[in-house]
Length: 364
Image 1 (tube, rainbow, N blue to C red):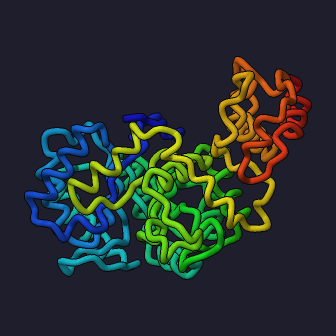
Image 2: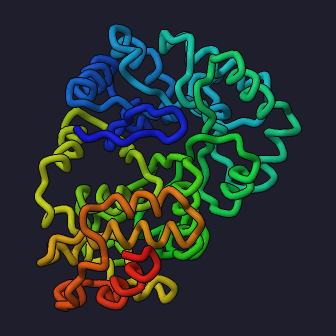
């Protein structure tokens, strides 16, 4: 397993986590076995916005001897007071649901307490008016909630909450369908969504990824806008390449699906290469680097994708990006303009020109 660090807190999070949206349909013993296999494989990040209330008791049993080794995303607004999943902005219902979830999970603290599923301004207004936001902030002061998060599908709303300066992590839907402006949750243009990812990285707000397979649409050639099926490995790599992302959380519905997802860790580059999506690139992303590394390896050994990422972030005001660039052992100034990268870039980026721009911008 590989891990990435949550900037505000320093927790080391497994790049592949586990969503719980579908596994609740399984018998309890199967849920327990799957969660324990995940932990054994190095997964330490679990999202608890499940479709079934049954997951909480099963997770509590699965994690009772390793609670301190894992991190849980618990959602304020995911309502299980009826015994099944529901959504609410009512403070008392949220308090009851969260208390019930914590009891079943056998925990007295929440690693990441999420303001759940805010997609419209009215949702945020309701959370504030009903005192839910103040309640979460109070729980953080008391140490019950370690970090405050936000789950949303709407870039503009995420920006509003980021402006408030209260969240350390955002759970967002990232996949090529949504980023290319398609599907029910393809909210915002490709450039708007990319700007959100860059802002999160610039401000030290981590991103955990939901819906990486677009509900299975990307895995089905008949349903995919790319007219061919992508693999789970390609979708995971796509999400992990986005700025700010620390983890991808697929909804694993069985032990077999968990093992399939974990296969990403040993998959060769060719099996993770998602450059086929370049055939449907939106106009506002053409000729822009997406850090996919398809242009690698550089004959001079330059990390072209990483240098592009630091350049884009630095121009957006990320001071740390400049520092990171200047610590690279090889920089854009060492580019020999051989054209190897240009010939391989599926998104038609003039990387030779970019290397000259980057070297001029950073001075090396």
